[in-house]
Length: 110
Image (cartoon, rainbow, N blue to C red; front, top):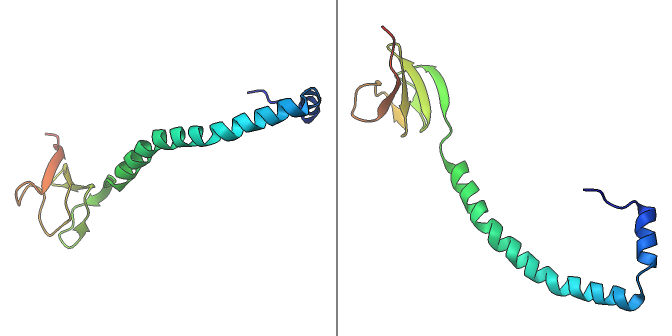
């Protein structure tokens, strides 16, 4: 967007009568709250969506599984040549055991 230089702006403003300037300022003052309400209504759902997305667990590869380590949701580990993921906090449960705590993400090759 090309904005006018300060000199161009002064030249434009010099051509506007005081009455016209007052009309423009009144219009801007009356529209500002309406525009503000519209923008707020438009961005509120977006803010809520961003908050929800940012609260999701982040995915982290944490190396070879260690029975003494506490793994947070979103953790990925390697165990027996495969990569496993958990969506819950877990400690001491070996990947592939304990029900659906660990999910196989990448099966080891042959």
